Length: 78
Image (cartoon, rainbow, N blue to C red; front, top):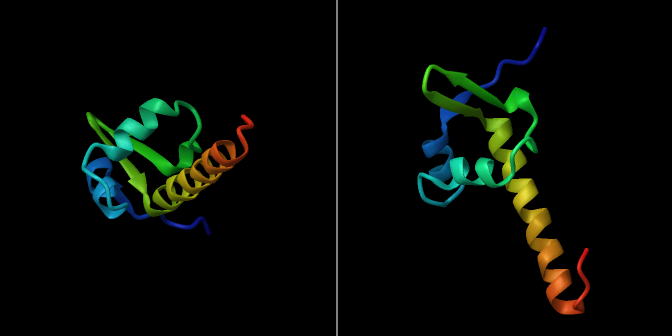
């Protein structure tokens, strides 16, 4: 049986990540087609994200922050 996702609004997801309400929608615009589609759902004009999708963004943000720190310290662009 497929696992059921719990869905929340993008603005709630931003707050859950410790940022402002627009954080997730801006992140998605800046990184188009990078998030697996199964983590997002659109109902009418409202976009929803699963809790797994929030974790996915959190992990991607940590990876990007680590890469940026390495670039800053070594002067090498990865």
